[in-house]
Length: 555
Ligand code: ADP
Ligand code: MG
Image (tube, rainbow, N blue to C red):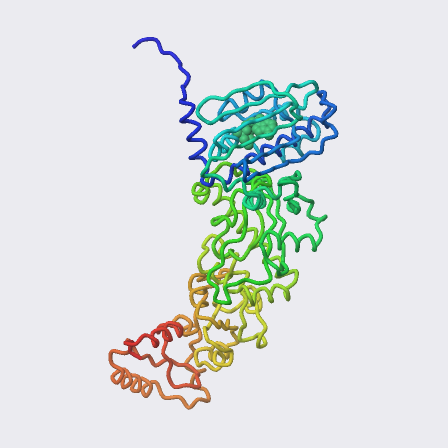
């Protein structure tokens, strides 16, 4: 074998640009988000330079407000975005816009790290770019992109950089360029919609509403509501919460509870989540859409993100901002990413814990919430194995010991009855029916507390939960349950005029004979009951009702 040698990859620039522009993003509209994010980064860098006073800034610039101005023109079919940010020198233009996947912003942050500059934390939090590909998303919609730019450094020259996306670009000095950057996009015929003020306004509101600098569109400010989650918890008023909740969830009700949750590990998360007052699943309007939006450094990654929370928490509203989520990740990719499932794990257990905390803090408010939202909690216990045991803390039921209408958490039942061998429940449409049931009777007589479940779905909830606080959950109608309340022979005889053992056996044999195949066994067991016989271990009352509705079922 000959001597080895190292070679650089060569790239077919035009093809590479095509790939970046057309395959990296699913929606063309994200070019607005990308250019706006770049403008915001440029403003952030200028602010930092001015504060750090390491370099001399162009004196004209210092009076310019930090802002992003966008204008669209249907007749000229153009989209223009201008910022009063840091701008670019000739070298920076070539390096940053002339090198695919090179991020000047990332380099800027790297320098900050080295300098460990005082106050650099603020800049870092507000800076968005890092991949060096966002700019090229403009090629999805452009016949031609022109970038006029002048660096904020004192004495800088203005330049015009341009490309039609076919693999090369031109740079030339230009006269009268303001400090900052102005990008003029001549839109393709198939992208005319981005010259419509209405369209661009809704895109800006969707993705860039919370960008930290004012954005104007044809002269009017677009982003009027701030990123509330970035403020200090204690400084946020109830009114701000209400307005913010209404804004992000397009709702008019009041949020019941809010959870402002920040953490740095295992992931950087800043979440502001709301439990709404109302949900729409009671009114037969079908399943609700998830309502939590995913952001990365104040820029929308995905609205109503599907897998961000488990399905049963679809009633939650709010925002989750995680700088660990990269900006340029496509939706299809995002849904199944490991990152999303890590976010989901952290968030869902935090929300469950939060609701539990609320129930202790203000049981009355919690119980009112529970009245309307029980179906979601029950769905959670039945389906979300990861959060099941914690979500079960959120369940509330009437019991044979509570007053009618008053509810108890499972834990309270355990606490009141430490000697009870299991958690017992019965499913019955009404409290009166439940309490009159001969199945429930022996439990109550023994002093056990029985959960009175009123809905068919409770059967599934209890079955899937199976145990709580170390105790098994048992249906009173099951053989297992009935065994647990079996009386001793002596107890059963007392005062009931009971049959002798032999008489009971005889009666049982006779019944077995008459009932034939319909029962598997007739068992004379000592039991003090107000009814002569009980069917045990049959299909549950719920299943029985379902079977009775089926036309061919044996009664
Ligand atoms: P990223 O934002 O991820 O770094 P982009 O492709 O969006 O990547 O931009 C590439 C680089 O071009 C940026 O890192 C930045 O250095 C430079 N740049 C882009 N837009 C502007 C702007 N409006 N003002 C100054 N520099 C910019
Ligand atoms: Mg960018």
